[in-house]
Amino acid sequence: METLKSSVIAMCALSAVSFMIEYLAGGTKLKDQMRFMIKLVTIIAVLLPFIKSGANMELPEITSGNAYYDENTIEIYNEELRRQTSYNVSEVLLEQIRSRNIDCSKIETYVNILEDGSITISKVTIIADDFKGAEKIVKNCLGEETEVVNGGQ
Image (cartoon, rainbow, N blue to C red; front, side, top):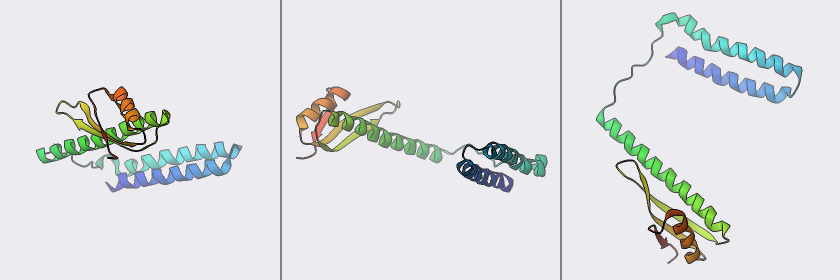
């Protein structure tokens, strides 16, 4: 495991050095020569730990997950998917509302993930100077069945 760790550290260091050389060398002939040297050193840094340890390199054992881990993983994934989808939809709706010159100070989208993996948007809360106009835009984008709530009341 240490050999793999040292190889990764070497790769990170070489990447940083490569970036600095390209930044400092600009468009000179030195840049091409240094890039070639960095590639050679990178290949050596990657292969050297494997050559030293030969075939005795041990990889960590991967066990089949238990039910607790699998359920938590699915819950974490679904929660992150719900959060990210809510954020993305809110940003798109906010952009649509502002493009119609409506001042919108807050928009919050409530997203549900069903058992079959499908995503539904149940409610949108808006604080805007023209709530009716913003509501019309949201329903136009998401469908008439979407509940739109005035968060400013």
